[in-house]
Image (cartoon, rainbow, N blue to C red; front, side, top):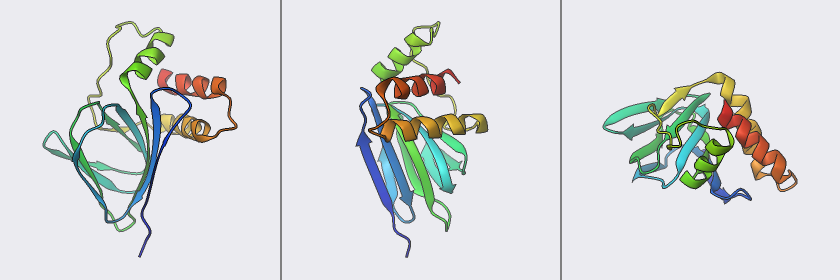
Length: 151
């Protein structure tokens, strides 16, 4: 039987947490996060219920969930479901958008829960890897995060 794993850790960047999971049998019941969720599906296939619709998460696609949006999550393949999430709170998003000269000064809302954008995958990997490493400088972490969000 395959081994499931989950890991959540705080980072040195205020308002940012990381989550990594490999699921086979575990199901997340209805829940929500107080932060934005930006996740990259790494392997297998997942599915979730969100606003009365079923969404499927394939390798290379992103999960984009707004704060407070109720959703579920579960593996939907024999290969399980592997994914990594950035949880970033509204204050941290506001700070990033200010640094990027975001014109509206209003917090964004994701319109799609599943996003296929292959050119973002390398930038996501760079951010995730750098942020979890203690040896990477704060400046480099912030720079990679800004670059990812600018894309």
